[in-house]
Length: 307
Picture 1 (tube, helix red, strand yellow):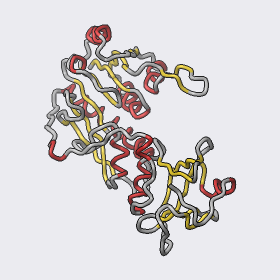
Picture 2 (cartoon, helix red, strand yellow):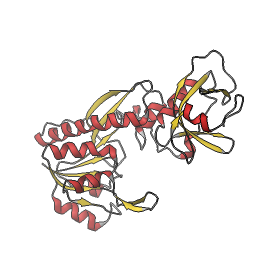
Picture 3 (cartoon, rainbow, N blue to C red):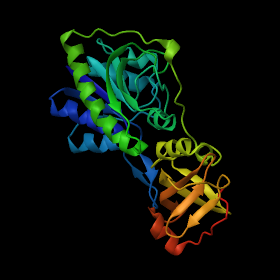
Picture 4 (cartoon, helix red, strand yellow):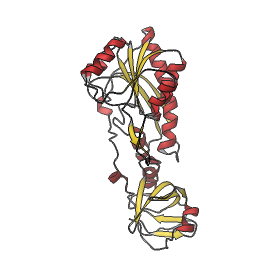
């Protein structure tokens, strides 16, 4: 089975690794062009490219997926299947090239949470379960016929970062199982029920401001759903504070939403229906730390408001 693998970030690595370790003929790895990163803004390769170079796999890095020269290169590879994990939206002239089709790994139980941020939104919405799906590509994003799905529980305090790692591993196993079904001709894809679809759009910085007026459980889900990236935040005056982890407070009573109820090593904030205790925090430009460490060097007063 001759494969072209397309992917970019850490989420794609387990899938590329499992195909390589199971001796699939990886004709090429397609990933994004190197990007400036770090203080020196040196050109930095994607996680997928680093793995490919380390294991002497050919790499293609097109600026445009519609570029005729890139498409011609893909045609020459004569791949049986394209495997796509955490990559860009492929045009039809690309995903229709392989004779056995192109399939994608998505980090949700499709048709739920179609879009760029399924892991974040599943937690923000308070889901108790999510999963991974492989499906054949079609022109409309995340709508193709499903090959396989695997369900994964979401822990009550699990963050998006923790769930990301779990789903990346589960997804790799699903990719391997899917490609074996395709290889043996035993794949029986089924259509998605589009009436059950829900969106998972990209999350921008302006979407990450903590809504202190909401319930404690909603705020808890919001913060862990954005941890560690893109990170929920609040303001203390002109200072931006990133919040990574909280717990719902068991203390009786509550104050106005966003009001500091305690700041004595324990940092407790009023919500719409109670209060929450902040466990991990970061002042913008500083390092992430426990709240106890943070309060040794940053002064907050009971009765002050966060906004």
